[in-house]
Image (cartoon, rainbow, N blue to C red; front, side, top):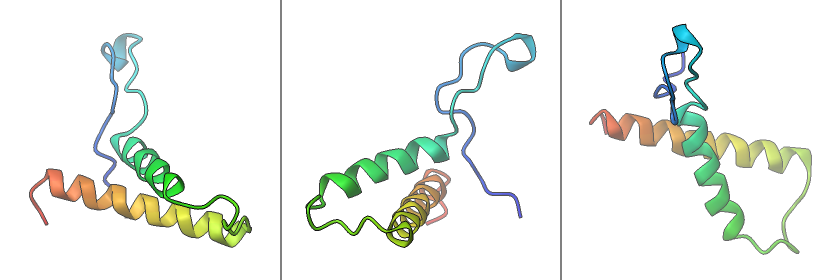
Length: 75
C-alpha cells in the first residue's frame, strides 16, 4: 500500500531539469509533531529506550497522516 506523502514540502525547480522536491510534506508534518511532542516532555523523565523512540516516531507519523487527510477534506 502506498502511503500518501503529500508531495514535496519545499520544492524548488522542475525535478526533471535538476530541481528538487525537498522533503515530503508527511516528513515535515511528522517533524513538527515530534518537536511539539518533545517540547512538552520533561527530559529527565523521558524513557530513552528504543521502544519509546519507536512509539514516539509512529505517533508523530500518525499525526502527519491525519494532517494530510485533513488537507484533503477527508476527516
